[in-house]
Amino acid sequence: MLIEIHDHDPAWADAARRAVEELTAALPGLFGAVEHVGSTAVPGLAAKPVIDLMAATVTLDAVVEADEVLGSLGYRRLETGMRDRLFYRRDGSPVAYHLHVVTADTWDTRNERLLRDHLLRDAADRDEYGALKRRLAGAGHDGDAYTRAKTALIQRMVDAARDARGLPRVDVWED
Image 1 (cartoon, rainbow, N blue to C red):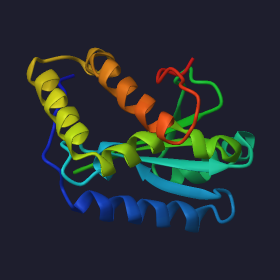
Image 2: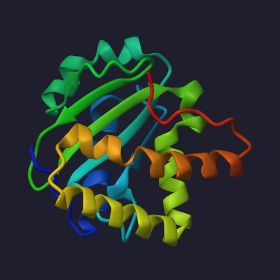
Image 3: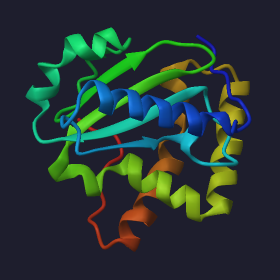
Image 4: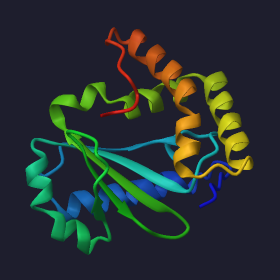
């Protein structure tokens, strides 16, 4: 599957806001926080048309018990092999959605949130990241190769974000 990279679309923020409102209305009290993360959350950054959301919950088991409600919203749980995280995908057009559910006790140190905040503050890194994504997509990489080819740059930016907050460095690839 070819990777499609689009110029930033201001409509992505509205799509994310609506999805957050839909999730919190359908599952009141389940999520302590839900945020728009990923490239579509960063104005000026080119991205795949996929809205990444991250949600914090007290226990992942409570979210698994709500799979039927999430399914009624179009989210289907996929096994990613990542520990301490649930991953749901909702297909759609013009955007798809990824919902990453993590425990509240890890919320403040999640790399996706740290990277988003770093890119919101650092225009040079944002532009470098966007240019890399365009080059990789233009080279015809498939999804896994595309993601892996971004790792070194993402690791450097996440390390900078973690250093700025006094957090220990961790590998951006979860086991």
